[in-house]
Image (cartoon, rainbow over all chains, first blue to last red; front, side, top):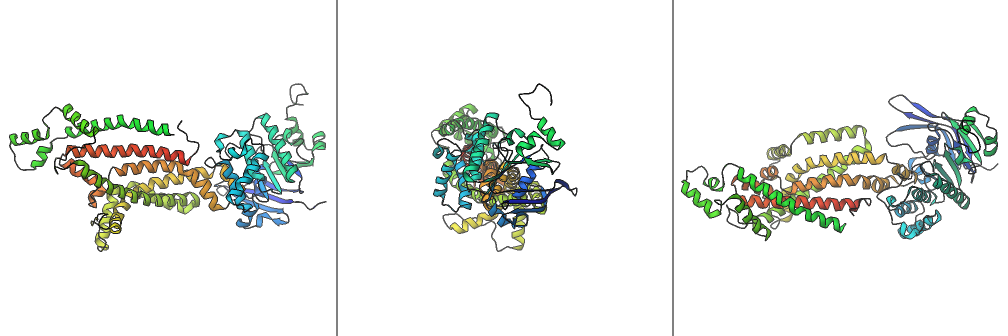
Length: 270
Length: 314
């Protein structure tokens, strides 16, 4: 057994709201090995996004959230790092792709500049070298004519193209772990497949571990080796993808699988 | 972009024409005219009044007076002041320069105060937010001439060494000139800073909850870079708009502030001209002030497009 890249132990997340704490993640534990792809499935509100964000210690603006437990990344507990050290981890070692590409890019900066600032920050590149690298990255994620497109602003890109840009940003510093939080939910079905293929290819080429979060079993299939099924802030079932699909043990997993529309059955739930 | 500017500039012509007509008619609708105003309280014969009116062309029908003025104005002649008997242009532009300087200083002060307090308020929230918002409400409730009067009282009573009414011309003593404008600029700036502060606060709060700020954090950018490139740059657009319009209004001259601090600017000139019914002067001031407001509007639109690439006027 290889040393895990990320080892989450008994993670809790509690929102403080006017003295009434609401616990949304309820002591979950899991490991991600270097280069491994792990899926997290569950309906909205099950705590999967909060779990993903906890790894980067990201909280929505204006909310106060308290984390408990341990998040060990290469043996270092992220929940006990000071803010400056945590900032060095974000983007450099653990990067994230978010759900809505339409609102995830800064509208007043060119897309190139939004890759540049990350490279300048973490890779210590000069502005000129960063731009050269940014153009390579845009090319890598399949943006045509990357040299001229780098100067364009987000509103000049379609949703799928923006998600490609955001993926280019996320992989720019070759992180060891890429967290993708519902990366295709906001996209057209045809574009979804392209983005998933892109993520798979980059994972292979860059040797990244991938934590893929989704509510859609269709997305998970063929993408990851292991799946954690989450409900009410807890992991209710874990397993390799194929056995879990073939013989789900937990009632909730069966219900989720039954919710996926199929072409080969007659109408109505199975 | 260039087309937008050209169209906007063309549109200013009919607006200015309308403004000049309204100003012309309103002035003559006021009771009394220059002849009576210049006579003051002394009794003067009706014949003498008529002579004065005839010599100034005030006996002609109003439309004739207006067309005469318009023709001259179009050829760049703003007329001759009734009271001073000198061309209005030679009087108005030095005063415009004074008001512009006062506005510039006030604008810088308001921008500095407003952006700082707005940012602090939005970023720190809590107690700071309460203090800033309370302070803004107070400033908003108190008109600037009251602030000006309080400043005069404060410095007059407790710091008499600071000259309040000693306006110094820029050509004579540049640093003394700027110093003499600081207090009047402050009384203008405090009110404007409320607009800047509240708009900055609202915009920063709105921007803070945007997804791209979360993305910026996930990129591991330093807090200062996030503040500069993600928060402030996005929050700037609405602030630029309102501040530009407020400054445009100030450029027309603040009658009360310039009168209280005896600054020879546009506001004071307007006040004196209305008191003496100096029609050519009033017409010229209204024309110049509205031109400035219209030009500032166009400038704000251009600034808008510069700050935000999504804005296009084609």
